[in-house]
Figure 1 (cartoon, rainbow, N blue to C red):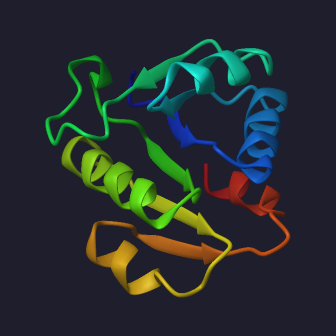
Figure 2 (figure 1 turned 135 degrees about the vertical axis):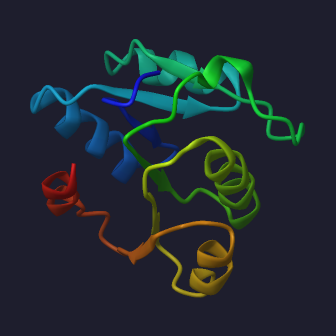
Length: 132
């Protein structure tokens, strides 16, 4: 991973759509995963660069390397998103943005290091590309 890449966690259809937009715009990115099944599913979308983490281990994954330019975490569950936030905030200097379909956990995510928490029920987040 290099400073030029964007890191994305994409467990949802909105996250997958965001990956498609990054590919279309030719924006370098890597995908954060915690299970091999995710790698297989996302590889079918053409994703080639993965950062696999063990969310049960509080340590920083060695393969994360240099920090990403930005991190986009599409919420799957409160628990998993919080674990990703803890990991990413430990080794990412860029802003971390959480995209949530549930408006309740905003203060929790901000406390754990999210710069912005975006509530999107529709999953339409193409406007986020402007910040990349």
